[in-house]
Structure formats: C-alpha cells, structure tokens
Length: 107
Image (tube, rainbow, N blue to C red):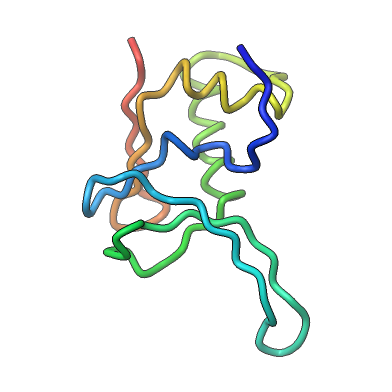
C-alpha cells in the first residue's frame, strides 16, 4: 500500500456509463455568479457525452463508503485510500445520474 498526494481519489477508477470511457479530472476555478469565486475538484466525461460535471468530494465519499462496507475497512488515512481502492475496485461506473453508481470489485 502506498501513499499519494494526488487530490483525485478515483483518477483511474471512475468511468462514464454512457460512453464506457474513463472520466477525467477537472478543477473548476473562477468567478461565481452572485460574487465570490469557485474552486472545486470535479470529474467529467472526456468525450462530453455527459454535460454535468460531478463534484469530486461527493462521488469519492460515496465510493469510499461502498468500499468500507465491501471490505469492512475503517480508519484508513487519506493518503492511502487511493491505493486501497485500486486493490479492491476494478472500476466504478457512473450511470444516468451521479447517484447511479455500479461497481466492479476485484475477487
């Protein structure tokens, strides 16, 4: 198990259910309508077949919770979570909505 400083936990594991390609990491930064700025980690389809960008924190939390339940793991430090997920998961596929996630687990 190795530690990482990669801010995207699912960089190699998140796939688009529409086109079956790996989703890409994107950082949204800029002015927010109504004032202020936005700085948000996201995932999006590289082919843009899915218009919505997915909030990285929300998707990563859902997938990590599924992994905890699957492998009965807990108290894994954040720098090691990507490594743990890569050992447990082949891929997580986002369906028509961000809440529709299917998993292919390693056996």
